[in-house]
Amino acid sequence: MMDWSPILLSLELAFFTAIILFVVAVPLAYWLAYSNSKWKVLVESLISLPIVLPPTVIGFYLLLLFSPESGVGAWLEHTLGIQLVFSFPGLIVASTIYSLPFMVQPLQAGFSSLPSLYRTASYVLGKSRFTTLIRVLLPNIQPAIFTGLVLSFAHTIGEFGVVLMIGGNIPSVTRVASIAIYDEVESLNYNSAHQYSIVLFALCFGILVVLNVLNKGSFFKFFKK
Amino acid sequence: MNVAITKKLGAAEFQLTMECTIQEGTFTCLVGPSGSGKTTFLKIVAGLLEADAGVIHFDGHCWFDKSTKTLVPAQKRNIGYVFQEYAVFPNMTVEGNMDYAFGKLKNKTLKDTLVSIMELQDLLKEVPGHLSGGQKQRVALAMALCRQPKLLLLDEPLGALDHAMRSKMQQYISEVHKKYKLTTIMVTHDIAETYILADKVIQLDKGSVVKEGTADQVYGTASISGKFSFNGVVVDKTPSGILHIITVLINNEACKVVVTHHEANFIEIGDKVRVASKAFNPVIQKIN
Image (cartoon, rainbow over all chains, first blue to last red; front, side, top):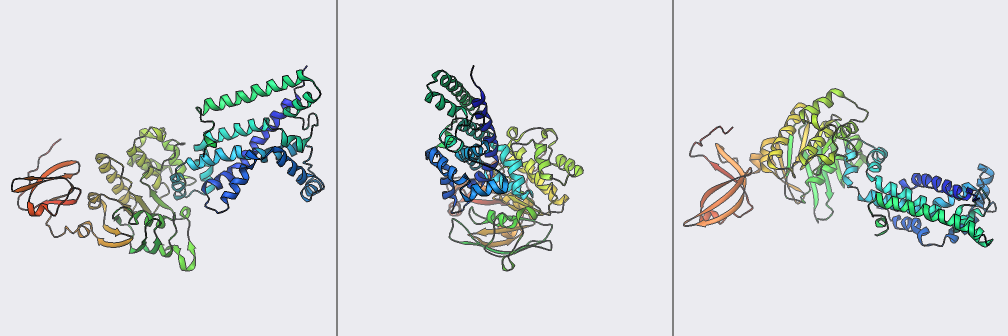
């Protein structure tokens, strides 16, 4: 009988990561889309780093950062009582950083595609930037929001290196599906590895099909600049 | 309203220098070639752009004073602004757009009045995607008036509309201007519009005021007695024997005028002209 807990853990991680990412990415994407700051190009590059950097590099530095030996890790543990290394919250933080570009880029493209008239017209009606964002901008970039949510969800399910570095392999805590597969292969349990793999394969393929159908084949347009 | 501002214009190498007093409750038209700074002026008055120097006072309030670093943001100026592009939000119905414009200042009576003036009764549940340009602009005009502004800024609001819709919109604008005792500033390219609507016309060129006065004074036609006279655009010029025939488009109707070769030398296709007659009395007939 297959142990479903790694799959459920992957789904749980992907769900929370996508929600948190949305909240974090909206202000970032808004700033990137509308600011003229000279720092923009640096921030943009930093956010895109997870696309090209080996996940192990991010995982390694997060491991150092969150470890109780470091200042940040010690502060988190002693002041807030949060341990981010080898824990589920740690996985969420790491996944949020790792999937950031997959949420920020679609949202940024969405904001940039809206006519600037929407913002000015809302401002002269006396609306604040926040009201304009909530009532006018976000409702008009719904396809981009959907793309961002689905991409970051799928990308989190597919992550391996970061999760392994920061989470380890603790059953029901940090042993997500991708790690379970690696573990089963190491132990020569090819049957179990097959089961997890086929579920992940079907899941990710299904998500992308839904996304492509809903966005009418425009899946990759956000990454073409 | 007192405005005295300067602003360097981005693409061009000149600066906008405006110094004018606009009587409250009057209708002012800003005219001049594209790029002469008309829209920039409106945006500075609205608070969407900041002037490099100067002051803006309206109705006893200081909106901008560079020397004291006063800058009231657009949100706090309570201005009605209608853009050339139709500024209605596609994610809301017509009624939703109006409710958004009202915000917390819900005012059922005003809403009903605006709906009736702009004839929006049948469109309230529609989304903007299903509306024509004229309909969208009526919604935008209604939205601009929801917060009961004292100042209405119109940036070529009728530029993209056909002639019939244009005349109708002119009536709507004129009606709300009078009804709500607004101070209205409108950018336009249409000379006829200035005659119909404006108490005062300010002509800009390369960022400076070149003429100011009533439409008649600005267009230099005050000397012709206006028994029968219309403004139009020359669309054709054909030599015919010892004369030239000039075709002038006046309000979508073409009319032919005979001139001498000498006069024809000074008239080119595309020129804006006034066709006037004072020697005879024109025939008038009812057509509907």
